[in-house]
Length: 425
Image 1 (cartoon, rainbow, N blue to C red):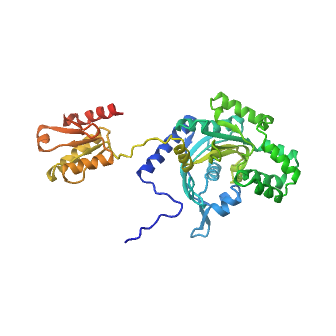
Image 2: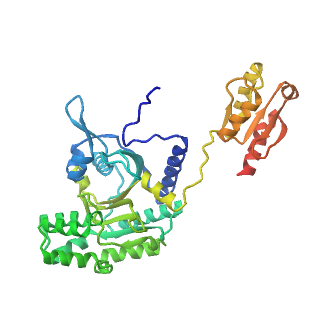
Image 3: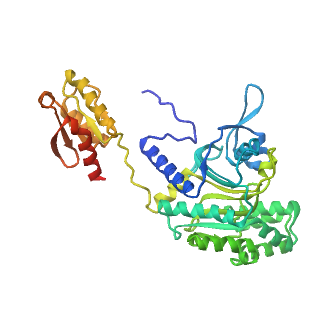
């Protein structure tokens, strides 16, 4: 028995049914992004590792990136994220671009991590950023984009929430209990890992990081205060803007949202399934120095990224996955015999010119076999043109769903099929 070569671990095969969902998701993302005036862009799959080494965090660079030397000896990586690429692209043409920029992208990314449900080593990701505006309004707009996307795909604020925090608020609160400098960065990492560890292990980790027992108690009180956001004028304005835009129900203050990447400097947010233990769907926030760090002039920005796998898991859980057709064409042209094959291709070309997707059966075969094929691929209509139909200048249209058929003039075939397809939509 032959051995089938397996796909690389953590990658995915996209058969037509999976591709249909990916295309639908891409279309939904495009619709929402463009409704807010964002322009599509794309960057390369390969980047130099130094692009990420400065700001993406040690874990991502050393443990999750696929890194290899090229023939010139430079260390190259398959991109694990897009924000550093975005910053590099802006830095290269900063004087030519009209600021602020609203850009979005949807493409493949790669991270070396343990594959599990909702996570793989190769994935597609939506990235959307507003560059060059440091106002509260910019932060609120990106959260509103996120909420509008959930509305677009049928996820309610009861099912998913956007959990919001501000690192500046946390800076001031941590400083008030004596946590600053390197200890502050360690505390941010500690907060980011709280839901990933048991309470006992988290306490031990906190104390081993240099936090005192008194500071740990004060930190727990801070993280348990749902009204802490009232001390931030910035967050009060963010929530007021979301209220005005009609999406406030999706937004929730959460002091535990820190975001692990080092380049976030202000508002940070994560969207998660609201059920107990619900996993993160997307995340993002405000950054100030990323463009400058890759050689450009300082520009603020805010954005988020969402992978294609977890959103599919959440949609399936709540029963909102779309019913998508994978039929390659609505119409199949049958072939009566070898002599009529050329004429069958002529009929298919005429239907195609009418703007209808059509398949011509590629060889002569018994009609039941061709009709069975049409049914299995999901075609709605089969066209039959034998010697009698050809002599009379007509074609028989067989409706495979209704099990009915009618005969129409060849010069009216395209128009009639258009009318029939419109009636069923």
